[in-house]
Structure formats: structure tokens, C-alpha cells
Image (cartoon, rainbow, N blue to C red; front, side, top):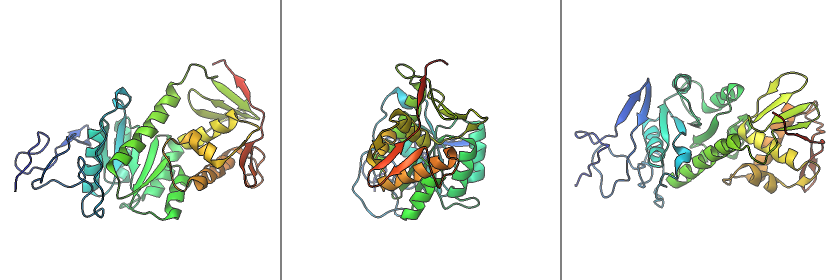
Length: 310
């Protein structure tokens, strides 16, 4: 058997190099390895697919290369109790140009978040201690960080629960390397571009007793207090306020806030609308702002005022 040596592998064990930086584990980036690999190499790095513990054989997909300065600042935190999974996800993202951090459970995740700036979190569901759903709920009480659930649980109810609790996306294992990179890039691009947009867009939108700040992506109740929205919720509300008085189909709303298709698409919008109603409506069961149009979609009924001043 011929061993394929990489400058990112330990000379004795051939295992991936892990670097400890301020208490957090970083996985060194690796170029895809060719041929038969030696001991310590798990399929899933580069374009080799996932390890046998995680998947059935599938078509190999090349890992996408870094796509420019957008991701130089993007840090992804991988939270999974399985070390092989953490290494595979971390290596794939590092190869694509991201900086990565890892954590094995919710407690380690909290420590890493307290010590480092994190742009996107990849979160497993089944972990010791608090599960991924509980952690998602707790995160959304204090943070609007990009959040993608990555789990082997593929039931429709699990995917909808993840969205209901505030996740921006849900990826089912086994994960296609290229799809993972594309989804993370799309989320980072959306978060960064929405924060960077300044030209040609009025800063504030007002409707009823609500005021949206398009630059800080925040929503304030003029009667007092700020209401925290997830990234997906803010994008959907932005689409509604931009098209107030017009009936919008679920597909139109989905296309406006999520660049990567997510299944089931129409149900995804329904979940987000329900979450917005709970935060905006005085009586969510009898909505007045976001009204369902039978067999058509939704309509935002409030008058929206555009305000340019800071």
C-alpha cells in the first residue's frame, strides 16, 4: 500500500493536524488527497466522500475552491460529538477557504462563542447534554448568528422543527461536500451583503408601531423594546414590506430570502410566516398584518413608510 504524504499530516501517524488556538481546536486545511491513503485518513476529506460510519457509497463530488475575499473573514463553528464528523466538516470548509473552530457539545460551543467571533454554526442534533434543538432555541434568544443544522435525522418533522426554532437551513447527513460549501457560502454571502448594503436602499421602514432598520437588520417596537428576528425571518419581513399590498406566492417569498433551495419549500415559508405572526401580531391566530390568501400565498396589509434618515 502506498501512503500519500501531505504537509498537513503527522509524519508518524498520518493523522490530521489539529491546532489549539486560545482554547479552541482548529483543523488545518488539506488539499484533496489522491490514490489510496494511509492509516489515519478518513474518507470525507477532500473529494473522497464520507466515512463508512456516516454514509453509503455515493458519487464523488469535488470540493469547491475558495471563491475570493468574501470568506477571508468568515469563521464556521462545527458542533458535533463525533470527532470524525468534526474533522471531515472542518477539513472540507478549510479547503474551501473558511476558518473553522470545533466543539463537541453545547458547553464547549458556549466557550468557543465567548472567546471567538463566529459567523456560522453547523450544529448536530443528537449530542450528549443539551441536544441541537435545545441549543438552537437558546442561541436564538441571544444571537442572530448564521445557523445550519447538520444531522442524520431526515424526518420531515425534524427539519420543520429546526426551522421553527430559528435555524437558517437544515442539511441531512450524509453531506455532499460541494453542497455543504455552497450552502455555507450562500448563508455567509446573504448575511454579509445584507449588512454591507447601503447604496440605493432607504435605511428605515415603518409600519404600524414597528420600525425596521435595514442597515442593522433590526426590528423595533416603537412602544418600547427591540424584537429579535432570525436572519430568515428578517429577510421574509423585508420581502413583505417591499411588496406591501401585493399577493406573493410562497415560491416568490422563498426565492427572495433563500438562495439555496430547501425542501419542502412551501412548508418552509409557512413556518417562517407563523413565527413572524407570533412576534408581530397582537392576535397571531387572527392575523391582520400578514394575511393568508387562499390558494395564492400571502399579502402584507400594512401601509409602509420609507424613511431615509439615520
